[in-house]
Image 1 (cartoon, rainbow, N blue to C red):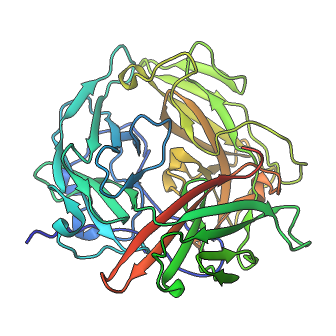
Image 2: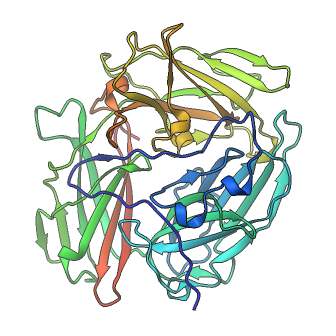
Image 3: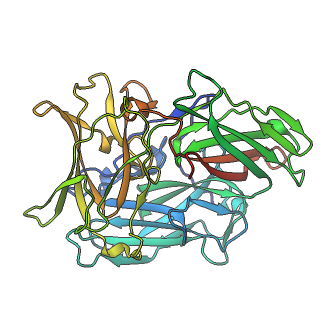
Length: 446
């Protein structure tokens, strides 16, 4: 009997919006890309992690539905024709043999010791064999890709899963990523609305929803657990929803005032899909004596006291191609992007972080802004792949885990946001948490 162990973030549950901070080594400084195997985190140490990259030479990790433009990492149980694509770049620009494997978790992302043949038909540990190399780029790298599940293999159980990648022959984990498998048994009707509370209706958003159990598969309503996440961040979520009423096959959640989401603000952005046609807010481009690109963004300022202004964004995500250009990942170069933020006065009791898909939608110490007293600005540099980027600034006390989305960016009920509704059902008969429905809704007219 083979049991694969894996290690994942245990979410703290409470009936409020949660903003969880995590440290990671992703996007660490790249002046020295070599790292010994002894310094990698061994498997037994990698607990309390979410989407993490543990070495500085791994960049641009993507896990998404194959053939979908930034499709979320969602599979369907017993449908092997739907696949996920994992890809990443190794800046050491040399061949390394990597393996990947995954493990089943409960609805709280706690790993369960299950025989892999219970939840998966096939072998849950494999090699990543698709390797190509960058072409005509100033930063060289090896690009790795893998599609899973392979043909003739499938996930049997719905629920939460953790993927992790290792260098072959090593117990050290290089990166981890979450994905889910759904077995749709219900339909979901949902709406984003302005809150009913007059004290918060100018800056908060509320989700109301109904579940329709047309096949009468839900035997116990109390076994349901609904989790709603904002803009694909597992660190900004609500749960502990109680039904307003149950009528035959309809379960309604219309009074959800125990849990509001901050509307936040539209994301800031910059465009470096084409180095010869960069966006206006990139004010300087330079090539160093090492023949590497550096780009400086215009200095950002807080927006918390400004009125809401409509702006198109992609809710924190990254787009690596233009409308007329196909995605050729090995032809995209890297550039060091220099961010600056002017808060007028330093926020000495708090830490400021960049936030978005480039930080895996979580607090990452590699993206913490540093205050420079010589110019009175917060600064951070990051090595990023060519693309169109959304980002914003969040604030966190070093003594707390929750982050504040609005202190610098402001919060408005009109802001466009994506919300994902995950409906879990605990089967007492099978003693497992099933994911029986997912629905994505948007606010702000998207």
